[in-house]
Image 1 (cartoon, one colour):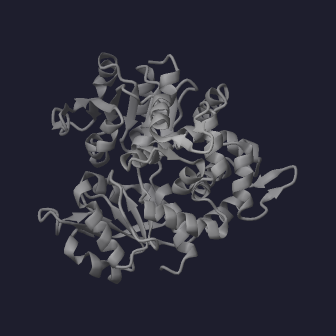
Image 2 (spheres, chains in turn blue, orange):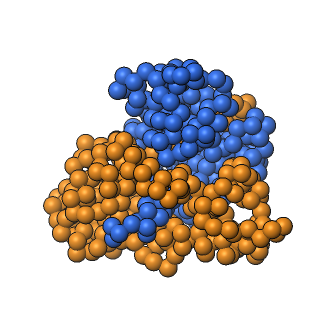
Image 3 (cartoon, chains in turn yellow, blue):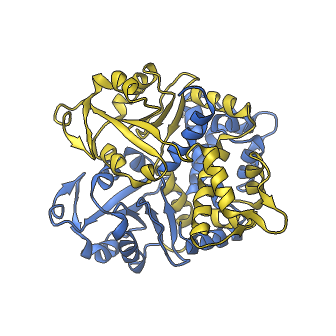
Length: 224
Length: 224
C-alpha cells in the first residue's frame, strides 16, 4: 500500500480502535467457522480457533473482543452465531458489492472467473482494457469496454470497488481514473506501489508473500 | 489450508515458538524496510513500522524479538541490517527456489509472468497442463508439459515448491502428484480445501479476503 494510504488506514481504524490486521483476520475466522459449521460443530474455543489458524489464543480473544462479547463461558464461541455476526461486521452479509476490473489480460480474466468473489458477494459489473483487440469481446458475460469509458461506467453501475490488473506502467494512471470517478476502495494486483489520497482505501496484493512463507519453513527443514 | 496441514504447521512452528502468522508479517516488514532504505532512511522505530503496516507497536516488537535483538536503544531498528537479517530468516537471501506450476490457464499464465516472484528468488522451472492444446506451447520461456510427466520433471528440476492453478475439481489429484513426487511446500490458488500429509506445508491463497477487508471499511463509511 502507499504511504498516504497507510496513514489514512491507521487514522480510520484508530478512530474505532480496530487495527487493520485484525480486519484481515476476521475473514480467516469466518472461513474456519464455516468449516466447523459444515461439520455440525456447535461451539469452538478461542484456543482451537487459534491452533487452526496459526495464531495465538490471546490474539483471537483480543480480535473478537473489539466487536462485543461472543463467548459463552466454559463452552467457547457459538459457531453459527459468531459466523453470522462476523459476516455482518465484514459487510458481506446478504449484500452485494459492485466491482470494476481494469485490465482483461491473463490475471484479469482469471479474476473475472474466480468463484470465491461471487461466493462472498463481490460482482464484477464493468471490465475495461486499452487493447483494441480485447474491447468488444465478452469475457464471463461482461463486454470489455474501452478504458476511456471507465468514469462513465463507474457512475452508471454504482461501482464501489476498483480492481487493477493492468501492467505496472499503467497502474498509477488507471488508479487515478478510479479515484476521480469517486471509487473509494481499490485493490491493486500490479506489483508496484501506488499513491492515493487519504480518503481512498487501497489494498495491494503481493502474491510473493505466500511463497516466502513457504521458503521460511523450507529453509529450516531437511526437505530440500 | 487443510486441517491436517494446520496441525502440522502448528507443531512445526510451536517447536521454535514462532507463530505462522508472524512469518507472514516478516514479508511485510521486509517490504517496508526496503522502501525506507530506498529513501535513505537509516533507522526506524517499532512504532513507525507498526503505523505503516496497520499493526500495533507491541506486535512488531514481539515479532522481531523471536529472531534476536535488532533494536538500538533510542534510535530504533537499523533499516538495512534488519532488512538483510529478515531476508536471511525468510530464506530468500541470495538463493533461488525452484517452483513447478500445474495449470496453464489464465491464472497460471499470469503467475508465470508475475514479476514479484523472480524479484524474490522464486523461479518456475516446470509448467504442466492436461489440455492437449496447451501442451507443447511455450509460455514465458517454459514449454508446457503433459501433467503425466510431473513426477519426473519434479525430480529432474529439483522442484521445491508446487503451485496449483488448476480447476477446483482437479486440485486434490494434482496436489497428490506433487506430494508423491516429494514436494514439501505447495501453494494452492484453487478455491477449495485440500488434504495433505502432516509433513507437507500447504498455503491456500484466498483472493476474496482482500476484497472483504475493503468491504469492512466501505460498510462503515459514507462513501457509497
